[in-house]
Length: 389
Length: 180
Image 1 (cartoon, rainbow over the protein chains, first blue to last red):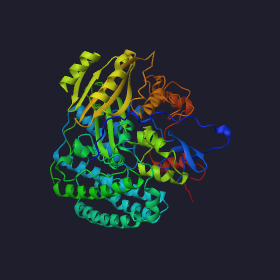
Image 2 (image 1 turned 30 degrees about the vertical axis):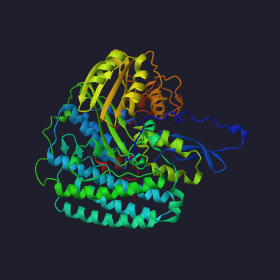
Image 3 (image 1 turned 90 degrees about the horizontal axis):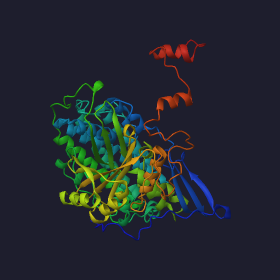
């Protein structure tokens, strides 16, 4: 494990000097908001010297729907339909954290079965999200076979979601007080079959993608994150673990059933695009193991919902909390303040992309070739909607 | 933890210390001491991770409460540092020299609440709202419904909840609802 030695005074926090565009030496190029090499609707304003990036600015706002503002005017249960839309490929983490924050402020304890079903739901979400990400990463480097495999296989995981929750994308399964339903008949067998298939698929992905000479040549050494950047930039999740920083909320501050699951925090050595990608591949495998463990250990019967007040007239005592979970990209958090009324006073959603896609991206992009910007961006695994909230 | 809080009480006059939950404590500090306190927590107490920075609008008391959430990975503790500033003189000392990501939060707070952070990089650039000419939208007095009605006009609701009837009457009145 890499030992962090606190803040490095040598680390340059300064913004780059403005580029003299009037000199005619440089070209300005916008990558996004509609571009296959961009993750979601955001754009990068790139200043180029030849084909080398000398300045990068991230622009967001193309998806701003004002969720945090909307939540201040809606009842606690109405907000539930809003939160899952904050990170489109991973709505479940929003459902869980919103529910968890509300439960914590109102003192609701959820049943044991709900704890396990929530854990399994979150890990299934992690698997679906990683499968989509592997496709994006591979596609960004010009390999179009792997995206077809993983995106198609993600649909089998979405089938499981459909069985479990009734929906493929916005599940609204984890609700305040527990979960909406137990597992349908035959779910366990189908889930195990899909996990077996996913494991075989990942072996093929490793052979085709990670042993590919072009992928290796282009991703190794690209966008290196050094340990002294981790705390100043607030880097979390696989981006931090890939440079040896052993931090995983599931392990460090276990929530739900993670303290009863057998797994180790996976770390890398040099956090470049290749290392980050390989670490995520290993975490995808780990995820399959966690889902199997959940299937083994989850109680087969018992209540899955706590007794709840009438949610149409639900008032939550005044208080403040910050709850967090380890999503595929690192620390995802909900800060909630209540004032005893039927409405939330303030919700702040902390997504890892906030820093990864702006401060970190702007720093790492400089000095790279324009052809590598898409790969660099996907290697940071960013979701714009969680920046704009 | 207790020793640290006592020392901070003595040195920085922190108040309203509340243990919100296991491993989360919040307290208030005066605006003038906030930057020094944050630096102290980061450099001496190991609170090296800025989880986020946000604001709560207490319009009834005419204050904004800025919240700095810091985490200590070794002790697994989180601190919520609250700083009250006046809604009229909405300025705060920038912490962009303490965390390399802080300027982004400050830029967002400038846009969403109108709080000024003198010296913070690119703080006056648009963040989410390009060309916004209204009051900062996260302030409590900004009425989203009124704004959308004025900007986009009133849209009448459906007369019928039956999609078939709605299609027939509203969208295809001349075709009898038949799309063929």
